[in-house]
Amino acid sequence: MKSTLTLISMFALTAVVAGCGEYSKNPATDLATMRENAKTDFAKGPDAPREIKNTVVVEKPVYIVKEQATGSENFILITPDPQMNFNEGQQSQFKIRARVLVDGMTATLKAQGLPEGAKLEKSAQDADLYTLTWTPQLNLVSSGLMKTYSVKLSAEAVTAKTPEQLAQFKGIIREKEISLFLFKNQEIPSELTVTELPAQIAEGTTPTFTVTAKVPGTDSKTTQKPRLAITYDQVSSTPGNSYLELDGSRHVSETSKDPEFVDGKWVFKRVFDTKNIAVKPQLAKDGTVMVNADGTYVRMSLKVYSPNGTSTPESVAKVKITYTKGIAAPRFDVTGLGKKQALAVAPGMKITWNFSVTSADKEAVVKVDPLTSNLPGAPAITCADSAMGAAKQACVLNWTIPCDAAKDALVGDIALTAVTVVNGRNSEITTYKLKTVAAPENKKLCAGGN
Image (cartoon, rainbow, N blue to C red; front, side, top):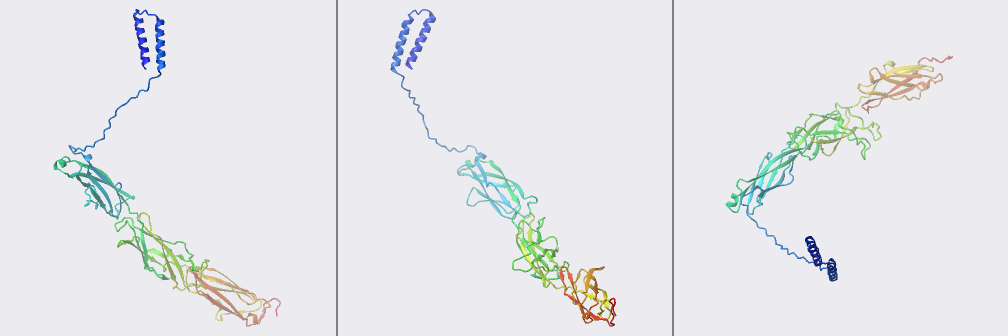
């Protein structure tokens, strides 16, 4: 402020005079003057705020396009699609742009290291656009799920408005490395069909049937072949049926291990064997054997798997195996009775009679039913496997005739029944009736008799 400037001047002047030693004015008079000046400044009040104005010149930017005196690769751009993924056996196409950042100029694009079959083609509609097209062959990805190809792209200016402009880019080439990613075909197998498998197969036959399926990503040159899986799906009880559908996969055997590639599909040959593999008996829903069944119903689940583990949807095949092999009924051997083929009995007699029941099938099991009879003394039989096995039963008839048995009551027969069982299937029932007659002599064997 103005007063401050005056005060500083007075102090400065006083200091100068004091320093020289020649100033002899009365200090009191000076102090009074200073106080008067201070009162005057105080009465004026503070100075008005200063307003500082700066003039700022704003200029509108002007863009000036200047032609490059000498060309540079920075003016040539190569812009490919961000991710170039291909799948075996499938055609894919991607875009690559090559352009010069100078009005009126265009560039040409070339590629080095393209995989076999890949093509780089210039668009007829867009001067800067190129397309990369490739249908990879199958089996190119030999291990793992992916293979990478490195490709070098190079772009060069080829046209310009003037020869001078084009000459500035002579010998200038822009290069760019890109990667092509090839994936193993991941499509799931499909179109599984079963042919030449009859709905009914006669027991004792071995028909051959065919399974075909389409397995993308494979062909005749594929090292790992697709595989056919035939299993039992355990769905034995089905609505509307009184029987169980049993395991049919146990009858399937291979004709050859590797399938054949025919007309774009894999062909598997299999044999449905009911000759060398015994047919199981038909079971009712409660698990018991259906004695009067004329065949056994079976089912099996089929899937074809690709080398990478994917599979077709499940397909179920059903077959009825009709019985044609007759199971021989057992035969009673009662040679011990002699020619009369009758048993002479009398009251008080104790009878032990040995006989056997045999099947012609060595794999069979012979079952002799318990004896039922109205004869006095309740005759009974017991049977056990012979030295030949279960196909022959050694049996014994034990009968103690009561002493009070009437002679007429001893005349009758004992009915014996047996059946042969092979793999759960029963033969026709064999019945043998042993006749009983009174002894020719009227002898009383009981103690104290006449």
